[in-house]
Image (cartoon, rainbow, N blue to C red; front, side, top):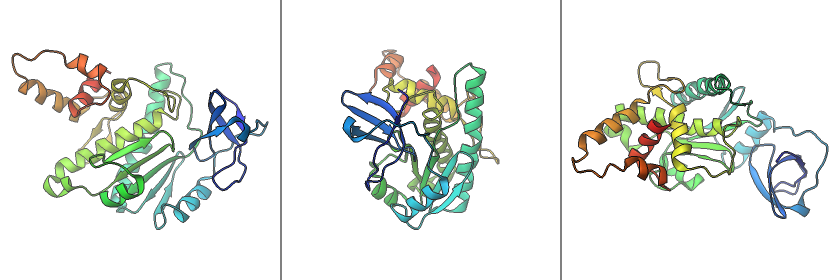
Length: 273
């Protein structure tokens, strides 16, 4: 539901936000930095003012003065990157995301989907290692990156145990992860998916995999929407080769009804999409 709201931020300052949804006597408001906050109806008032996203310079300063002190920043038309990783990691990540965002929008337009430019800066936070990433974000062990639909940010980390054991696989995993979580963020900011809406897991993850295939050749690039997702194709191939002859044949049924997906479930979701 569209509309303007005049909520207060965490410091009591009044800001012009945008009503995302009404829930009974409460509203969920999108703040100028893109975060969603819940407020009682009597805590906001509707105004005629224009919703203006927070300036990237101001947002970068506020975040690096706060939770991300010591992080460097980089900006583009759509993105604000915060990082304490190597420059190489930032360059590769931004190359994928900067190519993917307009590519996904162009694909949507070609399919007659009503897409629009993101209304707020797309924030991507890159940590140098897993320990700091988990400490700051609260991510559980095993989650190497994620898109948070509430604060509208992607978080990831650079170093992983896999980088020491299998650097070739580490590169593939890193590229696939950057593209996958970036696809979630893009799709939720251009009108394809609505933040906080509940979709079947296989559709949400299948869409991200559909829009996120990457290449691990010398260019380390995003391949394009709907191109073969090499990692997921390889997974499916290995699954079917290892499947026993008396398998129950319910892979699709299990995938579309799952509340949580296995790695094979992600691959099947990609194939179905």
